[in-house]
Length: 114
Figure (tube, helix red, strand yellow):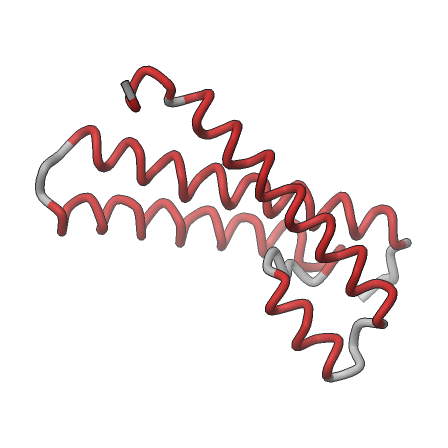
């Protein structure tokens, strides 16, 4: 696997987390809006989440490892596959990406929430 610089890995983590969170939140909002059947809503949310995870891991896995979650990055740091310094940067990128993804989903589906 080619080694990418830290900046490129952080952008991959932030963008991947943003897209993942936007998909999970957005599909949750739409599922809740489109049906009163809880099982069907959960199925729709799960399928969207699984599909985006496959795509994001395929795209960003070779670049950053596709952690998209501070807990996953912590495990990599504990295994010494990620330096403590890089762990801090990964967590900041992931939290920032998650916040942007949440805001984006709510902006996209604002009318569905009203």
